[in-house]
Length: 311
Image 1: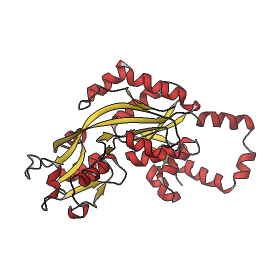
Image 2 (image 1 turned 180 degrees about the vertical axis):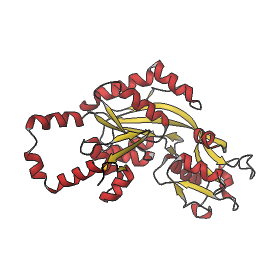
Image 3 (image 1 turned 120 degrees about the vertical axis):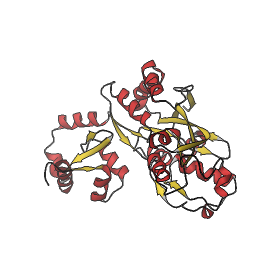
Image 4 (image 1 turned 90 degrees about the vertical axis):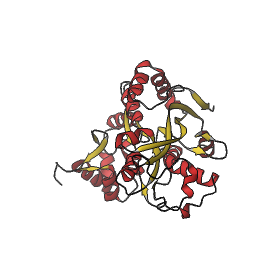
């Protein structure tokens, strides 16, 4: 392979025929080196080749690594942390964490539920959540309690933000509420299973006794807010679910329906004590809060507040 060739994480997962979470785990462990282009992580073809060849002869690999070097590798690996979620606020958080050596941050862009499961499996370190529970009317904590069974954890507020409908400019179809989803003339674009927006939609359909099968386009999925808003903007769909920020970025109208709490959850372990302390200090810092405020469309009244903590 040419040195000029590089791959995205998705391309590497396809080449190796494993999930993206497996690739993120290998990156976190320091087994696959990556570099960044903007927000995207990429991997040199040469590094991927080297990893594949190493897996073919693991005994030889172990033989040529001195014990002292192995210890240094282990120490380095322990300081790579994975932050999972899609909001740009997480990139700002990662930048602040990296100001606290020796931490290095990697980003996964999985949805809330999939990220929480990854945290349970040890594949992530900091997970962002915005999952609405229709039975309690509460965000995030009901899901954390169910999935992180047996783990001590801390749930911190990052920001709050508006969630609702993306509609075309001028709202020509006069869409105003969840009950409009009963209308047979609406064509929707959905989010992927496991995302917070998908959970919000499915819970609202359940609450309002609307069958998903009755909604045109329910099974058409996009994997981020911007793609959903873009589908509405180009007329591929009449309506989509997402947050206010993406609507303004794409240029579609936004019908606010919920104020969702966007939280961070971390598992409490002796190894994570320093990281948890650093994250709490960052969330409470004037510099971090000023940076978030400059973005607009975020409510920071609870930023840094401990929503729940187990011991």
